[in-house]
Length: 154
Image 1 (cartoon, rainbow, N blue to C red):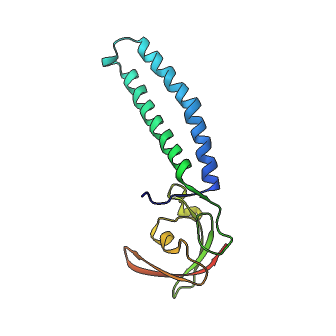
Image 2: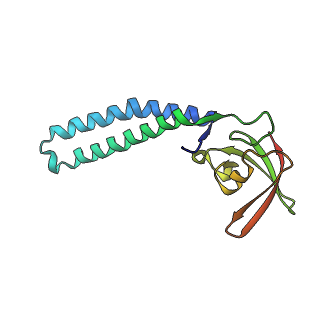
């Protein structure tokens, strides 16, 4: 059985827009490029044709990937129950430390630590995922084990 996938509402909207663009605009551009390349003659040594076919393959693969994600992913907007989920904002503090960090739990594709977006599949994210305020979580880092306290889940 496949592992559950989670995405935010924002990521769902972004993927739907990308799917529409790839399925209409990009697909049309590639078909036009293929028609032009075919008009040049001999397809066996036609670089334009081979490039267009490669672009078509990549586009169709991305369309299938997006369709799969949209069909199978669970869209999460956080938690009203105080349990850390995709879409939740979580405030943590390293045990024994004084610095508090705030993260928004997101899918791996949305992760961006510079903007405070933490993947639920990252070491810290998976330790926090489906935990609640007051819990201590531990995970392994390249420098050894780290322990954090969940101060709040919104």
